Image (tube, rainbow, N blue to C red; front, side, top):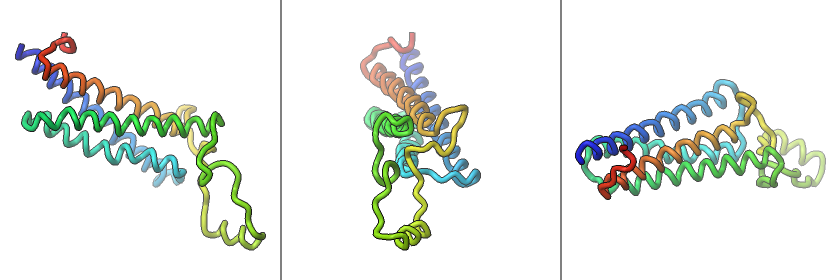
Length: 181
């Protein structure tokens, strides 16, 4: 019985560590593409990063709690929160990819028609102030896919890993060894 608990604890810890590593690589890659390659993100790209900004500290805290073994009551809710953070990010990735593929309309601030101007002088003044990065046009592709698609895949994978870790914790608390066999 003790051995199966150890396996479930170990499984949750390895999965949370994988979530943390994958999330850090993803956000550092996004910063690299923006800062080093000079490809500016659109508003939806920036919103997709929110799940990483919230999820990375949660995963770090979970690693500490799983290693420590105390405060077990916090682990399951934090795993659920980690799942929700990245499920939200995957959902935004799907929404953004759908906009890029013209499956549905995007937000008016970064896709669709431009707002009418009063005159040519207003247009020139506005162009000097703002550079609109469009959500419906792919600015960068990696292995043939847009970064929205990659975010969908990465955030989706982190969501699945967090869900498996949560299930391992649920099984551990209920004495089931179905995941450890």
